[in-house]
Amino acid sequence: MKFAISKPTLENMLSALQPFLEKRDNSLITAHILFEAKDETLTLRATDGEIGLSVRTTDFTPQESGAFTANGKKILDVIRALNDDQISLEGGEESSQIKQNRSKYKLPAFNPLLFPEFESETTDGEITIDGQKLIHALRKISPAIATNNPKFELNGALIDVREGVINVVATDTKRLAIYKLEQNSSKNYPIIVPKKAIAEIVKIFTSNLKLYYDETNLTIKNDDYFFCTKVINGRFPDYERIIPRELKQSFLLGVDKFIGALRQVGTLSNEIKITFVDGIIEFEALGDSAEEAKTAIEAEISMKEPIAIAVNGKYILDFLTQTQSEKFAIGINESMTPFILRSESFSTIVMPIAL
Image: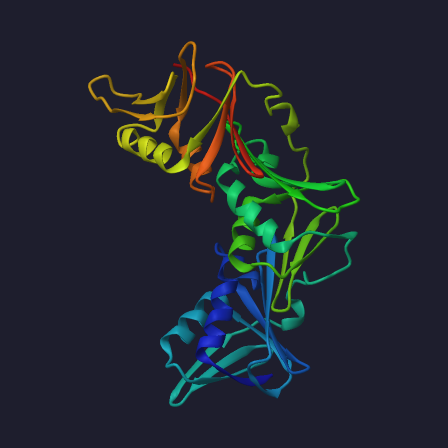
């Protein structure tokens, strides 16, 4: 196999594949990237066995079709060291060569036929969804995805396909984030996508995409990328039970003023006491008794008796910084019951902490 390609094009392709490489053992073929030139298209593939990505381009000069592999990190380091000019690459079963002007590099290779296959469209069905809205939803709920939770199904986001709606959900047991997508779907199918995969999906894709699924994999593709991830086999919590059905108090508040107050008192502690009083909201940092941080904002709220909740301020900030609206709604029942934050189709239910 032999071809020529500009440095910026190749560097961008290699950079996109880095998160998909095996990092712990460079002796494995999954630490390599597969290069394949066929039918005027250059395809680069990487997979760590859990997630995989193919990147395609026609912006290259094919000279000889075929395939080879090269260590993904090392070849990127080599390409970055070269000038912004055309680069020639050639490879086979045992090695690959990179040339530019008087510079020449040689890297060992695996037999390309041994590279793991993951680019397959033999799936059970297609999810009809607005790609731009899905990426928008995943960005908003991502902060609530758990990390290394013993309940492994919480270490991912649920794409809950239902008739007429798709709920995108995440929880770390302290909060629950939900984004509702109105869709003309006719199926009921829950898919739990790992956190690592979510992080890559929102980086790679924008709007033009198609989704396919089966019991073990989720596939997303567009004209340039083919992404595949194993899904988490498990039962996601019954999140609808956690959503408050009735609310004793509900207020519409300004986003910027609330963020400003949280950040002011949050300089001393993430744990914050918020007290809703008639016409005012008070904020107080909870922590070291020798320290004090307090502030208050005016608000159009009517209260017969004050209600105080203690909360990790980061959970509210994660919600507020993901909203595009000037206002948000907060619904409260009692001091120690979950309260809800809402902005259009996006909601977060937060569990208070003991005062």
